[in-house]
Each structure stands twice: as C-alpha cells, then as structure tokens.
Length: 470
Image 1 (cartoon, rainbow, N blue to C red):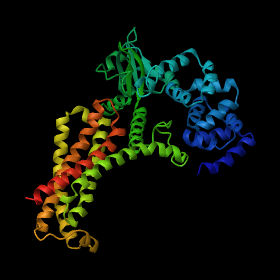
Image 2: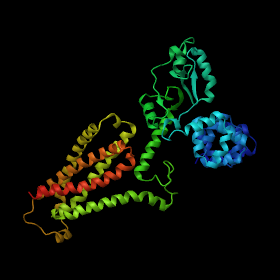
Image 3: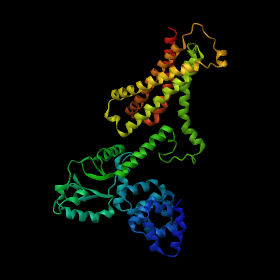
Image 4: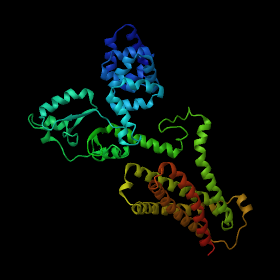
C-alpha cells in the first residue's frame, strides 16, 4: 500500500520531465517495489519510464510486473522496445515469461529473438516441466584453466553484467566437458599469479538435464551450493541451477502437494493458479465432489458393517464411544500419511526401506496408542456415569452385562489396535502409491481416510465382541 502512495509523485516527475530524478528514485528501490509502483500507471507511462532506466534495471523491473501489465506493455509499445527488453532477460526468466504469454503474443515475439535465444526456448520445450532442463540458466561464467587469479577476476568483471551469478565459475576442456569450478572467494584470496587450474575444485557435484527438479533442490541443500552445474549425457556443461531456483522448486512442490491433497487442482486449473474467490462455484464442485463421493461410497460399506454387527454393541456406552475411536484412528492415519509424503518429497524415505519406515511408525503409534487407550478407558467410565434418557429407552439394561471397567478396557484395547493399524496404513499407502508411479499427495489422504474408517469399525466391533462375550 505504501508504494501506491508514491504513484502520484512518480506521475508528477514524469509530467515535469524530471527523468533523472525519476530514475534516481526508482533505483533506490528493489525492482519488485518499483514494479509495484509502475504497475498502477498507464502502458505509455510505463514505456516512457522504462526507456530512461539502465538496461539491467529495466529488465529486472519488467520481470516483476504483473503478467497482465507485461502483456499490455508488449502490445502497446514498438517492436524495437519489446525486442530490447525480451532479449535482455536472463534465459530462465525469458522462458518463464514466454510460458505465461498468450499463444498469439508468443508467436509474434519469437521472431524478434536472436537465434540463440530461440534455440534455448525450443530446447527447453523438449523437457517435461518438472525436469531440470526446463529451468536451467545458460548465463554462467566460464574461465580458462591457465588463467591467473588476477586475469580471472578481470574477466569476471567483464562477464558479470550478463551473467546470473559469478560466485562460481566453471572450467571446461576444449570439447566443452566440465572439469572443475572455482569460487570467487578463492580467486580473491589467491595470489595474483596462481592459476585457475591450481585453485579449481575437481570433486564435481553435477546433475543431468533430464533429472527431476526436486533432486536438484535436494543436492543444492545437501551440498550447500550457490549453484549446481547441469550437464548433458556426455558431461558437457549446458547450464546451472541456482540456490534461489531451489527455493522456488521447494515452494512450488509444497504448494502442489497441498493443492492436490486439498483437491483444488485439475479441470484446467494449474498448480499455483488457484484463486478461491474467482473460481466458479460449479467448477469447484466438480473438483471437490469426486473425493467426497468416494468417501461416501466407503461409508456405505462401513455403515453396512455397523448394521450387521449392531447386536454386538449392546450398550449405550459402546455406541457412544465408537465415533471417538474411528475419528482418532483416522486422524492418526492422516498424520502418518502427511509426514511420509513430506519425507518422500524431500528424499528422506528414499534412503530407507519400507520395513524401516513401518518399524519407525509402529513405535511412534505404539506410544500414542497406549496414551489414547488410557484416555479411551477414562472416557468410557465418564460416559457411563451420565446415561441419557434416550439411551435408556432404546437399550434394555442387561443384568449379566460386564462391568464398566471391563468395557472401558475393551474400548481402550480397540483404540490401541485401531491407532496402530491406521498409522501403518497411513505410512505405507504413500510409499506404495509412489512405487506404482502414482501421486501420493493426490491419492493417499482420501484412501487412508476411507480405509481407516472401515478398518476402525471392524477392529472396534471384533475387539469388544471377543472381550465382552467371553
């Protein structure tokens, strides 16, 4: 909001022709903040202001403008201005910009690009959107192995304006194979006549262009990298993935998992494009109803089991405690499922066998089940102390009925059994779905909820029947 307050002042400086003052004000801001101000102006005003900015700052501000403003800008200014801005973009920013554009605008802009820029966009299209090749950056710094530290720093000073980062520089052989890298810190601390070959590190960590983006983010995190080199099938350097890209990948994957678990993707809605208030009611119903219908079908089966064995629930206390046991087990299963999905996402479970995961979850669930079993026993005693008139009218007291303590013990054991089962079910379902090449985030939660309800009823009825009829 504070940036919108500056919009009148920006318009005033523009109207008075005080372009130098205008540029000075904007350059004191972060490009994202400057874009927030310019986004409230007309397209011709934005074009005039951008035309007076240094090219690198103009490029950065343009990138932060809202997609609609960018498209209006492209439609409203001349070919030369558009070509200048688009050509100045870094490769990954330009690719993302073209992905957001309408097909009509994209076709009009493609001929304006240099041959290298067009080739880069076409090459990215050969990769799936979740592969490293679709997001890599081609503006990386390269140094010769025989260069001295002094000449290497001078070279980086010349390369810096057009590169994404110069903190890591890569060393290639004559065929383009990656043989090492050197950090800017090592160059600054080295003697002037030390060579890059002497300073570079050859214990390389790299990733293939067709690898999954999540793997790139994990490697940047695990090895504490500023940038990760991307190589092709023969080891030639084709680009880099930077640490800020890794943050974006993790955030996007987390958002994707959340939206899939919430059932808000599909039917033409891409991940990250969901807007609750703008979405039509009927489309939201179409996307949310299938999961609910699946759960309703499972509840038909669950209700059938309850009906068939209702005679085993011979007291109001047993009936009253059934929903608590079912709900608790369902929550435990959902917790386990969510934790395993997260572990799959960040790679923790990939390092472990299914047996280790189940053993870990069994121990956790064992402690939780024991605690909840004691609570269930105490709840049973409390519920039995306050019978309702409706319950007394519907259920005839049995003089041979077991003591309330025994009933509470049976319900507590049923609780422990259901918690253990639900936890194991919640832990194993995402792993099985993953091995079957499905999406754990989309399938696991509804499946665990539905199956846990059914197994909870069965465990509860079988346990109380065996213990209270003995």
